[in-house]
Amino acid sequence: MTDRLIDREPQRKVMDVRGLRRQFGPGCPSCKTKLIKNYCPDCGTVHALRDISFDVYESEILGIVGESGSGKSTLMQCLYFDQETSSGEVYLDAFEGGKVNILSCSGQTKRYIRNHLFGMVYQNPLQGLKMDFSSISNIAEKLIAAGKRNAQAMEKRATELLDHVNIPEYRMKDAPKNFSGGMQQRVQIARALSNNPPVLLLDEVTTGLDLSVQAKVLDLIKQIQRELKVTVILVSHDLGVIRMLADRTIVMLNGEIVESGLTDQILEDPQHEYTQELVHSLL
Image (cartoon, rainbow, N blue to C red; front, top):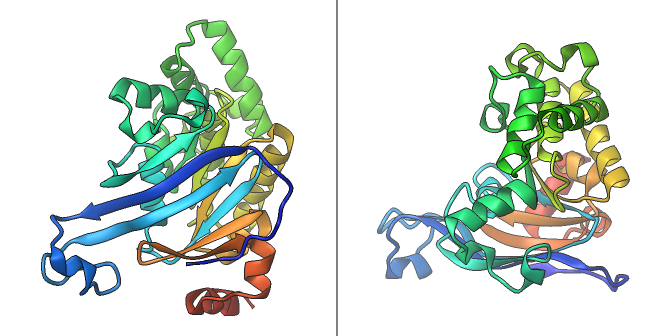
């Protein structure tokens, strides 16, 4: 991996990811020497994440870019406990001062972390929303999971958030199944922000949207990050999205980080052959 971070002003580290691995299959000795990309032809194991390590700092947008199958979405699902990791450690400053590996916590504690300290926006809104519930109810469900019980306060909070993401008041009690893809993503963003999480995880949130809708969603993300000072981890296969939003960028290929650094550096002087191809395709 090429790591070209320059000197930067001291910032508080909010997340520390160390040695993250996720494999699908039993593994075998050949996995160390005969991998074809991230696949072992001898035992059939797919190594989706291979020793992933990085830090995330307060109020930054960290971009993770890579082609389909590079492991970036698997990484997000492991951070949000949607998938189990094979090994590795994740430390979150907002939980026990960053002293406890959250991957080793109990199921109950992981639910607490999901509901209070992370917000997640999925590529497919079907994963993040209940399509038959009203938009307000989708947000209330997240608040209830975090222990809130005052119905009036929850409705007020939901209304404020939906207004913040530009859902018209007369549509707030509509079910997301009646919304466009861009509106569904905005409801997801509102839901993810409901408990003021310190870290917001965004997984391919503009994929499949029309270009004009993409631009509106990206502008919204930029606005929210600037106003709320939330730390964002943004996954995309589109370097144009990363260029617009990310302060720093990680480039993934075949389950590994092949390059990382300030986004401007990577765009202006990519070092790895794969990153060079990505940047060339953007020009």
